[in-house]
Length: 73
Length: 175
Image (cartoon, rainbow over all chains, first blue to last red; front, side, top):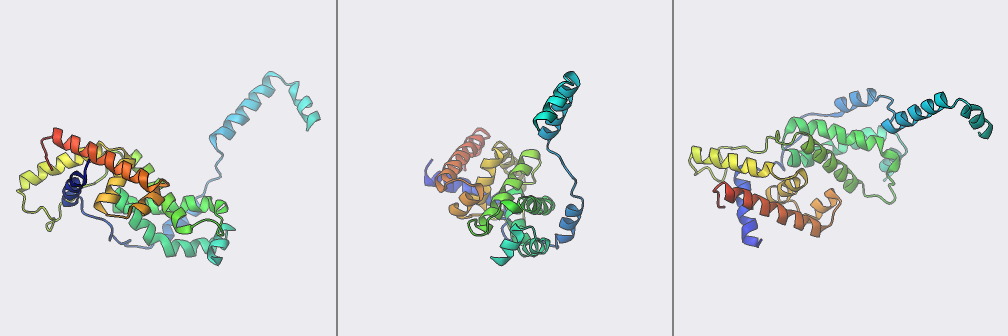
């Protein structure tokens, strides 16, 4: 690709895709942000749930592990 | 610097001050990539939400606030483009457009072909094309926002232009 090809594509794009650089924010977004912060859920990542499920299954299958684990803690 | 230090420590007032100071800048950057005002407003909030969650990772002594902010905003915008692929209202046809000399039918056809060609680009390439060729942002700023080198930006522009030329040529458009 040479500079001419790049400029040709650029010219065509600029003809149909107007620059949005000067678009101004029309309103204050802080109230929306505040709402988002207030709705902050207590989220546990999926791998934490997977780990918890794995440990529970393990304890159900091998209950003898529980006192052994407690002993080592 | 003091404000950034307080933000990094989790001070909600510092976060609000930074939000109010930078929301316009973040919005303008995002709208250049997603080209949709309503989406850009939501994504501005999403950007600050991610910032808020990551405040403890920001070191005001070492990190550059502006670069960090723009990087997060760019990632948020790219995530959005991946989700809504094909739905981005990319093109507009204002009456004072430079190509207003074309016949309406011709413009509509050409618009459709450019739309399809742009759609064929991945979000990463599309963002680079929009920022570099349409918005004419400096390559250094694009590189910083994407977390890549200036050379990599040039490579992406090169690849994107190649794809666009190929797509348009196949559609019978010779720029």
